[in-house]
Image (cartoon, rainbow, N blue to C red; front, side):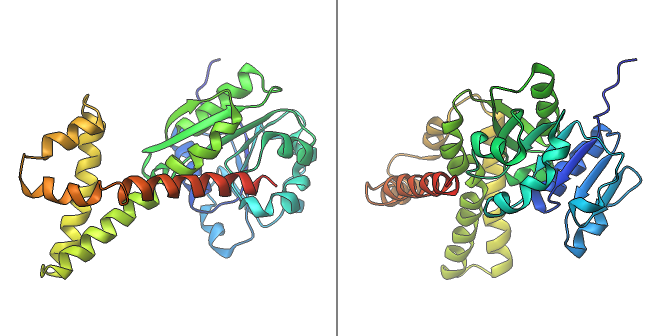
Length: 269
């Protein structure tokens, strides 16, 4: 009998991204999930198909996951991940930790079936964008399972070169924070210019979210959409002359993405 239900999953880390993915899996239908997270807040994730435990020693003895999803802080990988090496036999390990390479994770769990992925926080509303890279020991079935797990919260793309995940982390992984910063700064500027705080916040948020929706729906690229808003000798052109100065946004964005990419590579050490 063919079923679309997901097989048993072990989720290590029930934070914002882990819990967002869990919600997506439950919407698809999942046989059983064990969540390992010691925080008291994680207990709220428990439902009939989801068991929450505080440590690997509490995982039911009969539990055999088809996938182990590592959703913990990358700085904790060397300490926490080896505890799951026994369960990794016969399972694919899907890591959403920044910077942790396939080679390093393979040595920690003693398994060659590793998929490394970088989702982003719009996954919480099923609008995420994830880029993934599969290690050499990942079968077609294991890759398909990881695709199903990731696509439960948005769009998924694959790259063969794992090294590309470092700039991916900088751009799409951290990208929502940069968009939120734009909304934050627009709101502050509006208040500074005399607009009431409630109006400033609503205007900034809807401008950013509405522009994102237009970008997603349009067949035109971002450059053309920007031009569409920019009347010659108008107010937007005057503002863009400031933002697009070589020492303004072009320089700042380039430097910021380089800094984030470098940090992702540092985390691999």
